Amino acid sequence: MKATVRIQRRLLVEMEDDLDRPHEFAKERLGFVLARWARAASELVVIPFEYISIADDNYIDDAKVGAKMNSTAIRAALQATLNSGAACLHVHAHHPTMPFFGDLDLTEQEKLMPSFLATVPDAPHGALLLYGTGAVARLWSGNGRPPGYAERVTVVGFPMRFSWRSS
Image (cartoon, rainbow, N blue to C red):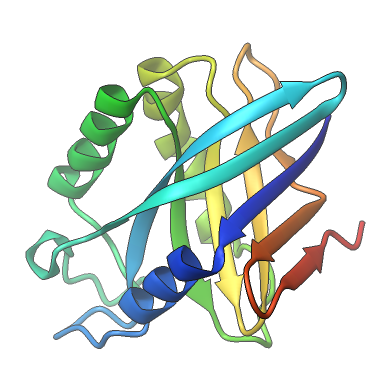
């Protein structure tokens, strides 16, 4: 299935501003976005509409990772997903020289996504990675299917931005 993630410029700015904030011990910030989606034939469009910031006290001090959130942060995102019936994407940012999910990112996504898929089973939950002026998204569409990468992540609003999956 061909997937596109379309982000409104104002929401992207909100995410980037939050993810750029310093933290007492975490080397990076994490967040979630709630999203609506539409499927037509072999296409899927995911449209994030609300950003959920993770509170400072919901980070765990762990020098082995850039940032680690506690179960309170995850439960809050799960509850927001349940309340809204929306899809949920875990969000973080990398330096522009690392425009891909790392091994740890992929491992943690595999642990996190089953809870979201159980909460709103029909939704395409996943992860969104921002890097420089680009982005990449990995989506789970449920029904036991393996995750896949969105072919495009686009920013709607001035100026528009586009990121295409290279493989």
